[in-house]
Amino acid sequence: MEQQVTIKKVLNNNVIIAEHPSYKEVVLIGKGIGFNRKKDEAISFAKADKTFLLSDEKEKEQYMNLLPHIDESLIDFMNDILIYVEKRMGQELNEHIHVALTDHIAFAINRAKNNMQFSNPFLMEIESLYPKEYQIAMEVVTMAYDHMGIQFPEGEVGFIALHIHSAVTDKTLREINRHNQLISQLVTIIENNMGLTIDKNSVDYHRLVQHLHRVIDRIHHEESIGDEVRLANMLKQEYPVCYNLAWKLIKVMQKQLNKSVDESEAIYLTIHLQRLTNKS
Image (tube, rainbow, N blue to C red; front, top):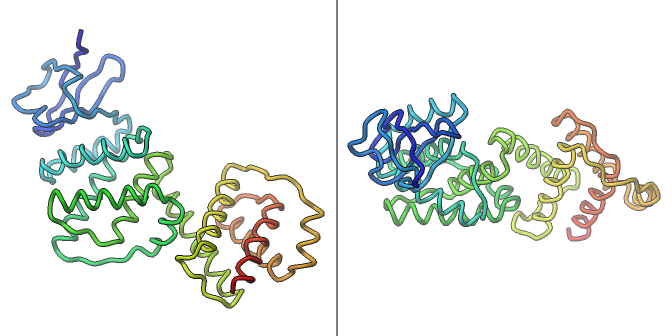
């Protein structure tokens, strides 16, 4: 038998909130799923193209307040987008993306229609750190152009990529942005101290940014990479400038993240910095 749910609220022709016997409140999305439906009416769970839970009361309220202000065709389009992203990423997305990305795309459309230009200062870092999410975000922007004839600026690709990364890692955008800002700050410190400008399109830049990202992740999860005293002493003697700069970066990370950093991180940072010195 088809599983039945009970309608609690019809948000529009394409979205309803229903009572599920196991999951309590669920959001059902599908073309025409809410048309001529009434509260307390039973409906087949299988009729929805997309379902998700909104267990967070604040997000549920935000979603309910958002829907009346956006075109129903956009809800339909967002449903297609989220199914596409889920398929491309090969995993389920956290429920918060339904609210966050719908809200972001709706505002992005208004910005594009009003020709409001803005830049994304972390575009290079985002592309380097999350290449798969960035590629999918580019595809989403192409889909938006094909569907609505709206051309989003390049900066939007970065923001959409962040939303996708947030949904697959269950990290908040605030946390992701904080880490990206820290990486950008660390790169600036490296350039200033080493008296060079790093080519943002170079392999070395991508390696450096990805390494800094992994360091921050290890610090966040309080992971150790082992003790390499002999190697540390050798690098300290051979490359004192890079070794001291590595420790300067570590102290910045300690202060920003409010966590201790494994001393061995200085070894691998020194190696990356020395590689940059050689290339310059």
